[in-house]
Length: 125
Image 1 (spheres, rainbow, N blue to C red):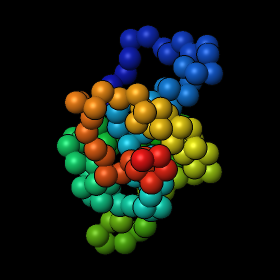
Image 2: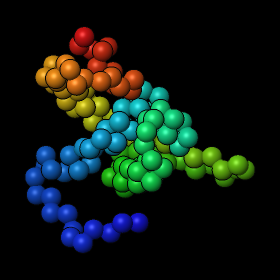
Image 3: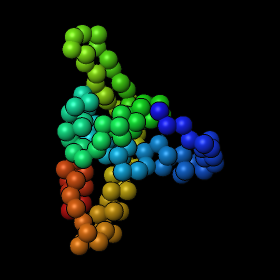
Image 4: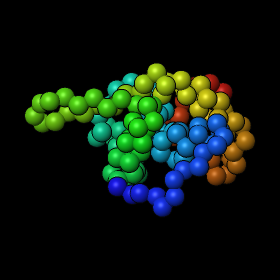
């Protein structure tokens, strides 16, 4: 796994929050798990669309390390692994909804896309 040359120097609570759930994929993973409760790796991959296996695996590992998701492994053949949000992971959903609402209201309509996992159209269309 990639090891950064410098340790993270997070001093601000906002920096910490953005490190945990910021970026393109982590927020999408959290929203997808919020809508589907529990999912297997292949289901997540299919829902997210154009994410690479490496990026999905790394993002899931980081979210697990940060206490945002739970990885449950069942000892059976074939192996079965499921992912779900922790209480901490669920606690970020209202924040992501507010950020999504802001993005919906302030986006450039010409460049606006749609995300099937984004619940924005349910709350403020």
